[in-house]
Structure formats: C-alpha cells, structure tokens
Image 1: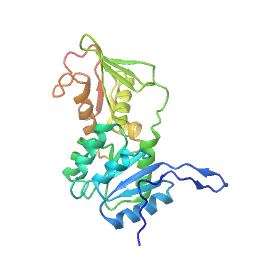
Image 2: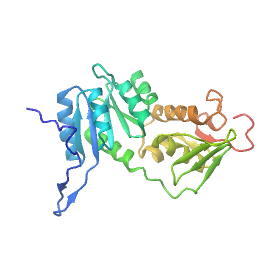
Image 3: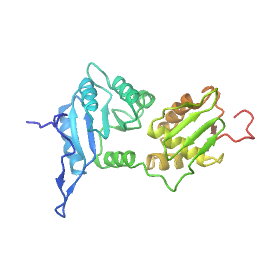
Image 4: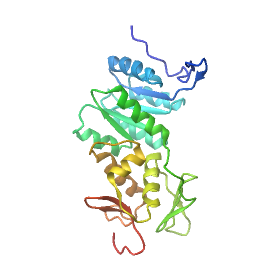
Length: 258
C-alpha cells in the first residue's frame, strides 16, 4: 500500500536529528498523477531532508497551496483534467512560490512552455534525486554574493533590493512592478553590474545557484519574461540588452537605441 501524506497534515512535522534536536524541514508539494513516481520521489526527498506532501491532480494542488504550508511546488506537466501549464500559470498569478516543472524530454517544447508559464526551473525524467534536491535547495536559499546597494536605477526603473521592490517612473505616479523572486534576482544581478556584460554562465550560477552545462533556455526565457514587465516595448528592449555571444547587460546613458 502506498502512503501519501494528506495536504491537510502539517508537512513540517519536526523529526529528530542526530544530536537529539528536532529539525524544521522545507515543505515540498509534489504534483504527479503517477503513484509510483509520487512514492519514489517522496521517499528520496525525505532522505534528502525535505517534508513532502503529494497530490495526484492540479485541482488538488491548488487546494493544497491555498491552505498554505508549502515552500516549493514540484509540478508534472502531464496531468489529467487541469494540466500542469494551467496549474503553473494559476500558481504564478497568486504569488512567487518557487515552482520546478517535471517534463519527459529536455528537448521538448514543454520546457519552454513551462518556463513561459512562470516556472523557476525544470527537471527531466528519469529524475536523479540528488540533483533535484540540489536544485530545490538552490531555489529556496536565494543567497546573494555580497550586499547590493540600497537602491539601483536603470533609466526609469527603480530597484530596492532590500525591500524586494521595483517601480517604473513613466507617468505622473510611479507604478510598482510585480516580479517573481527569480526575475527580481536576475534584475538585481544585471543592474548591479552597472552596464557591464554579465555572461550567461555567471547569471545561471548567481541566480539559480549552479551550472547548467550549456543549457541557457532557462535564462533566456526569464529574460524575456522580465522584459515583458519592465520594458516600454519588449520587442525592442532598451533596458535589458542582449550582447550576442556573451550574455546580457543593462543600458547606460550612452546607449542610444539598445
């Protein structure tokens, strides 16, 4: 018989550590309609130190997240009825809860679709538990190397790293821009470089916390999503600029067109 924690139960139930103390574990919600995958991943991630709750459908995922007590969602894209892309969009519309999508093929258009829907990261089947745990920890850690300034400016975009705040000053009143945590970290890293080129490899390492072995789709999709939110014309960017063959940089005053 497969045991699946019910989302009503507190997934942060402490467990005894080696020194006799209790440890509070990060809470992962696994959404997958395959019972074997739910069981295997639950056991593997439990061994990695996470508290895992599982649900088999998108509808139940939305209910579980609505009840709280979830730090990160692991989301299979191939779900019955309410598919994973719909779930991802709805979760992202509600806030910046970290989302890692699960897909069958790394070369599939599903990867791009999932990232465009708002996922922070992706893993492909078959899933290696140790690698997945490292990605989960990297998304939850969100540590920045060094302390950024209290305020950063790129043209009419104001960034306050300590407050997690971004405003655009394009009208009579500043307008707050709502970014996910990943989009915000990406913008801060670029803005802090003050016009210098930041390579794709450096951005992947600084924002996501590990190397991607040459796969930059994750970064490129997030840059596109960021441009949609802060650029006057995302199709003709003047704030976040692409440097072909190198990476990205933010515009400086001397940039005429970007």
